Length: 174
Image (cartoon, rainbow, N blue to C red):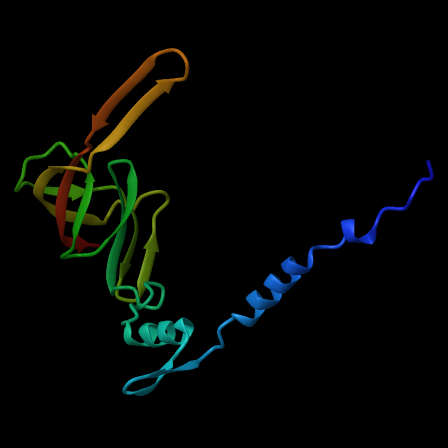
C-alpha cells in the first residue's frame, strides 16, 4: 500500500473551537458601560474605581514609626522579656510572684529616656527604679497542644492557658 501524508485537518483545531474563542473575546466588558433601563440609561463603573472611592473614605491610622516617642520611658527586663514602658500605662507579663494591689519595683532597667537625655546601662542602670502596681492576675487565651504520630494510633489533645499578671507603671525615677 502506498503511504499517504496525514491530512492537515487532523492537526488544525476545529473551526467551531475557533468560532467559540472569537465569541468569548467579543464578550469582554469595557471599563465603563451604559445599560439602558426603563428610567433611562444607567452608568456602570468598574469595581476598581469603586474600590478607590472606598479607600478614600476609610480613616488611615498613623504608623507608630511616625509618632514621636514619649518624653519619659524606660526599657526594663521583666519575666524573661524586655519591655518598653511609660508611666501611667498598663502592661501584661507572665505571672509575677506578688499579690493584687502590691507595689513592686523593677530593678533591671536597661535604658532610660528622661526629657531629651538617653541613658543606657551596661547591662543595667543601678540608680533607676521603675515602680508599678499590680492590677490583676489573669489567664491568657487557650492554646491547643495536639500531638499525633501517624499510623500508630497515638493522639493527644491538651489545652493550655498561660498565667499572666497585669500591672500599671506608676513612676520612673532616675
